[in-house]
Image (cartoon, rainbow, N blue to C red; front, side):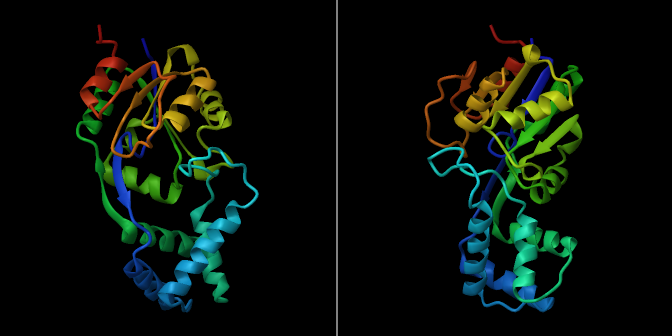
Length: 246
């Protein structure tokens, strides 16, 4: 029934938990920045970081009101570039990227694929399905985490929101993927764990939808999905995508 499967990433394929507020993280990041001449104490660094993120989001259109995925993505490496320059250190973009990735590693408590995720992707590719990824994420995190977990090669196309001025549920993000890869809406389905970003956005773009409630799903009513799974189950997802359900 479906020739094209469009996946969300975090909460759908990858289970992750990050915690940025622990002071130990900012102490280590401050030490790292000090190696390059950008001297901060931990509290100052944390304050400057959040102020810069807020300033970069200011003026952007609010996408939803519950605080989850509320603003279009910024490029987090630009924040770290500003953090260097705030201390008159003329770091280049790669230094900012490495700093952002180090921050990600420090703040990540767990990361891994949901049970059966890689097997599902492999099964779909073997069945001739065209797989794409549409993720609200930072490229400097998502691209490398997908490679580290061994799933990047399954996708014919990957769109990550930090590369654009919009993200799910903005219909432009879905249309960008559809137009770029000439996807037929009639035989394409979006698979995600967020009822607004993934499901409402995809339905507005004319796609079929499969909602799966995972441990990372926001609490919300999912009324528009064509298929609803109340718990993470890769086997059932596969049955739906391969047309094996009754």
